[in-house]
Image (cartoon, rainbow, N blue to C red; front, side, top):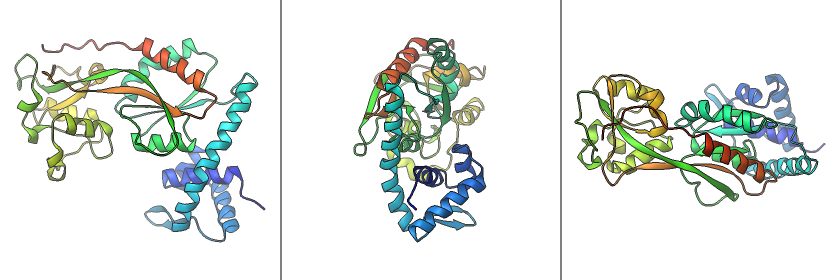
Length: 304
C-alpha cells in the first residue's frame, strides 16, 4: 500500500483545524471515515502523526515533518487537476474563497451578488479566517483565493497579488467625546485606543498607525470583533480606528461619531492573493475586476 492523496488532504485538514470533527466537516466526510484514513496513514508511516490529547489534537515531531512535505504534494496535485479541467473548458468544483474577519461581513453583501450576476458559471465556497491561516491555506491548496489586507510575508511558494482598492481608516468615538474636524493620531491618548486581539492584521495596522508598539504587553483589553469594540466606544469607554468599508454596519449607532484623520492619514490596501502557479489566473483576475466595480461607499456622516 502507498500513501494516497486523500490521506494527505485529510492530514492537512486535521493539522490546520486541530480537530478531527472540524477537519471532517471541512473535507465533507464523516468523522469516522476521516479518522479511519488517518489511522491507516499512521499505520503506513509506522508512527503517529497526531497526539490525541484531552485538550485537542497536536502534531508529533514526525507529524510536523510529514505535513511540511505533504503541503506541496497536495498543492501540486490540485494544480494539475485544475489545469486539466481548465484545458477541457470546465471547472467542476466551486472556487474556495477566503476573506479576513475585518472584511468579510462588510464587503461580502456587496460583492457576492455582483459576482453571481457577472460570473454565473462560477460557484464559490466562502470561508473566514485570519490572514496567517488563510495564506497558509492558499499555499497548501486548501484555498484557491483569499482577500487580504496586508502583504504576504517573504518566502514560501510564490503568490500572485491583485490590488483591489484602498480602505482608509477613520476614528470612531462617542458622540460627546471629540470635536468635529480631522483628528491627529498623535493627539490620541494611547491608553484609550481599543484593539482587536492578537492575530488580526487590523490590530497590527492600528498599532503601527497609532505608534503603540511599546504598549502591546501592557494592554488587558482585546476584542474578538470590531462590533464588540464599537459597543465599548458607544458607551464612552475608549476610541478606535475603523476601516471605511465597516462604517455602514459598525457606525450606524447614533451614539457613535466618525472623524476623518488628519495628515498623515492611515489605511490599508485590500487585495486578492492566489498561488502563482495556477491555471485559474484569468478567472481570478475576472473576480478581482468584478469586486473593484462592485465597491460602494458607506452612507455614514463623517466629521470634516
